[in-house]
Length: 221
Image (cartoon, rainbow, N blue to C red; front, side, top):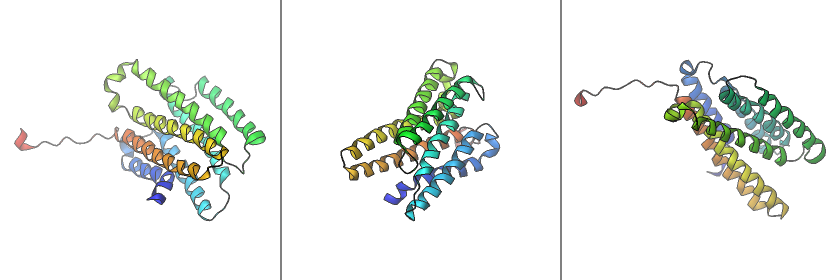
């Protein structure tokens, strides 16, 4: 059970990819960014888990993940908010973040340690964008049928995961600061559950594109 949770960062995006492939004719190119996001997660975290099993240094992959995460997810959310592929907000957010990301590696957390700073900022920015999307949705006519919107489920998945991720990162830094590493390690199981929830909601969003056939039962006619 423990190992199953630890590898959720690899098998959950893979399951989502299978769902995407199964209904790709219904989705077309509308959620291409989510397809790219899932492929990226499978590759990066499968490699990370393999390196960890072989006791090989894998911290650079987590740095790369945080940078790619904010570029990909902010593109998706801001496109849903603004209706534009590349809005000014997209460039402002990502250029500022990338500058911070580079400074963090140079001055605070190099590629040999876990990037808690840049990962935490990634979660804060994505969390803010998710909340802004939901606020805008609540003021639009789409709120009347929000449960049918793929973007509602997908962005809700990002919202829940990043809220949990931020709390885990803050707790992790505290536990490592007071030298209680065992408690710090247990936090990653909480994050693993959040990953499962995230991709389950993303999959739910993708399934909104599928038009299931209506079944007529003669005895109900």
